[in-house]
Length: 176
Image 1: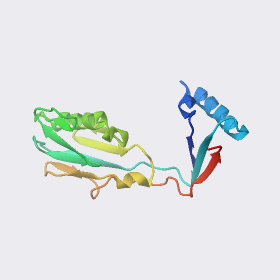
Image 2 (image 1 turned 135 degrees about the vertical axis):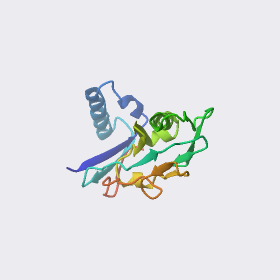
Image 3 (image 1 turned 90 degrees about the horizontal axis):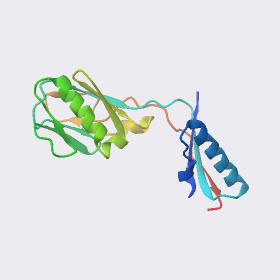
């Protein structure tokens, strides 16, 4: 199955979101009709892909994590500490790696910037980080650890992202 990515840039774009999927689709349909008839201004960018994209991901396995241990997602470093004070601090309890993994996943998901590009889940002592944007672009998100108590998959980046937009972008100008 192929996919189609459409980006609409318009001063009216903020009004295109409805409270349900059907309301949103109706609003988008009305907006496209307004663009086509010249009653609205904007630009439409379209790209297609030949395959369904898959998000890149990576895992950290924690084994006796201690305060000062660190991991990095993108350009943000998270530090385990017994006294968290910053958004990049992760509370280490020292009792179980399962609790420390849950704390790390929560810190990643709560971070103002990192949570925009990835999501994190924890199961036992393993934290899985997944790119929010599917496709090969996720393979370029740095993903590292700096301590022997944490083992990461891959070679410094999230991996496994496939598919995504493959065709050149087509741009359509409607009165702008």
